[in-house]
Amino acid sequence: MKIFTTKEIKAIDARTVELEKISQIDLMERAATSVAYEIMSRWRPDRRFVVFAGPGNNGGDALAVARLLWAEGYTRIEVFFFNVPSSRLSDCCRINRDRLVAVNGIDYTEVVGGEFDPPALSYGDVVIDGLFGSGLMEPLKGGFTSLVQYINDSKAFVVSIDTPSGLLGEWNLGDRRNIVRANLTFAFQFKRLSFFFAENAEFVGECKVLDIALNQEAMRSTRSNFYLVEDYEVKNVLRSRPLHCNKYNFGNMLLVAGSYGMYGAAVLAARAAMRSGVGLMTVHGACSGHDILQISVPEAKYESDHDDWITTDIALSHNYNAVALGPGIGTDEKTIDALEIFLKNYHKPCVLDADALNCIAKRPMLLDCITAKSVITPHAAEFDRIFGTHHSEEERLRRAIEMAKKYQLVIVLKSHYTMTVNTDGRVYINSNGNPGMATAGSGDVLTGIIGALLAQGYDSRTSAVLGVFIHGAAGDMASVTHGTYGMVAGDIVDNIGQVIRNLIS
Image: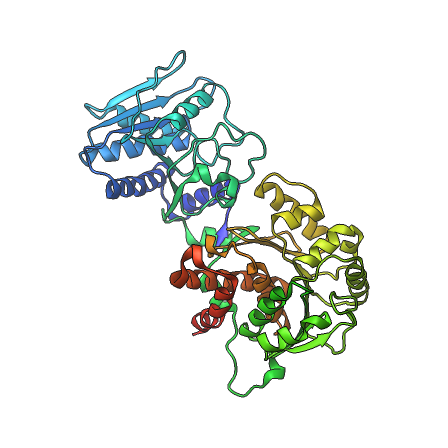
């Protein structure tokens, strides 16, 4: 599903009005009605509602919601409309202001200028935030910052329409103090990109997307650089297996993983690859890992390094369909030397994770040696070791888009909403997963899944996007049995086969 920018959403709104022969005010009424119905499904008419409406279309939405609730018997409504002289009153907002004023008995205050005496807010009250929606182009300033702080300091339950006031639709670099901290956000038709960043979670709260029936053709024809990956899309891409086949049809993968004391990473990655359908698997690691891997993953072959404890030589003994490197290999200088020789001589896309990335961080010139369309899968700390310190997920994504284009890499930014950045800068946001997956070895499992898909003939981008989704779905399935506290990485592995079965059935 496409995730549209504020500019693109505005164009889709306009196109909907044009194609469906409806007015902008009618489209606003449709949106306001969806919000009003949601509110009525959650709160009884005796609840006190305090509505704060700004001078733009978001304010028009809030004014319309107040009118619709009043018509349904919600009589404890107080409306504060900020008709600020320095801000242009939108046409739709003006119409909804006039419609509300014409309602007899509603508690309405229009704030035109000067001092504003805010209403007392207490626990049990519901604030409807309609000050500024996703059309806001710059951080809030002036008197609105004081109002935002007043709302945030109250104990009222805060509902934001479209987006919390002060939160921009895409990029919010800088001060986040002047953003409404919503308990519940009703987003129209799509989540905004900014909703997926961890640093904005405290502002968005629970998010529910309301379908306001924007024109399907307008959405289909509007190009986007951001996509939310959902199960039906994965179903359309995963290939079922033909009746007549053998192991050689499903790829031959090499996994370079493990070192003394870290063979669990190799075991997890190898088991994940086998559960993800790779036909043949070879693990390359130090001699001391031979028995551990042969016992733990008997389906895989083991290729011993010359060294007893670490990897010092990554010479390919076969023409592998895919190579994945990194889980548990350590960062010894001899290992870094071996990785450098491999990267300079291997000319197909590979998967680099964990200590392979930490090796690159110690020798940054290796970035230039990675074959185009290779996949790297850093968590936040690994990303920052390579590309410099970043202070938010938003900063990290912007940098990842830049680096993916520069080095022609597929970058998997691991987080709650893992984001896969393609070589052209397009971003694929994963829609599943849970906090239980924040456990040792989870990333090694992902490496195995992506490597297995690459070995089976999926391209780099598809392998990464599918791999992240399968990984998250397996984690969700594991949480049903073990919960988010008790889950370990091996539980994710154990559910991979069932997830794939469900997706292709």
